[in-house]
Amino acid sequence: FMEGLSTSANNREWKTMVLRNVRNAAEATGRLFAVSYNIAGNSIDDSVLNELKVDWMRLVDEERITQSNRYIRHGGLPVLRIFGIGFKTVNVANIGALAELIDWFQKSAESKYRVFLIGGVPSRWRDRVNDAREEPEWKGIYDALDGIHPWHVGRWSTTASFETYYSNIISLDASYCASKGVLYMPTMFPGFSWHNMNKDSPINSIPRLGGNFMWAQAYRYVADKKINTIWMAQFDEVDEGTAIFKVASRQSDVPVDGKW
Image (cartoon, rainbow, N blue to C red):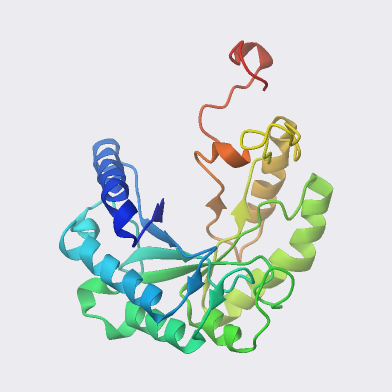
């Protein structure tokens, strides 16, 4: 997924250039890609929701992004993800307008703009507690989505705490989504650290355990027949220490400079 696409004119040009590069690389190497918008951290009014619609139409009409044979499709529709739906930190002025936007992407738009819509939601979306907004209207929002992707980074810090979280939260989320015919996509992450952004933070706050931390998640997800896809956090998010690219298997393989 090409994350962080912006409806802001200040960021649109360079982020569209990155998207073009992602598309070209995917087509050249046989990989897949899709678009993701991020509304987390914003106050969401009707104008912001309308900008999402307008920008998606731009990508379809001008960039012809969904015409690529490497664009991810599910159920015959191009996949679009919107991250930030239902978070307590995201103030949505009009939940009804958000419901209308979801309907537009799924049913009301011209057929060329319709998508399989995945919502990036808080970890406790189903119970509407902790990181999730509590208003009962959010249940209808979640049920309307084609796919649910809860953000789980940092919700467990050891393999033992993951097993508890899986049993108490993820397994029940997966069962709920299965009962609604909604795709469930839990997060898997290799470890965590803020150290690259803040040198005062621990260098290894959630240890990777030589890959065993992520392996415990992968093993459990594969064994659950209600889970058919996962969100890998992340390919290149170095600032949070979750990047999976260019990983050294031995201490002797890491650069001499820096801390690893």
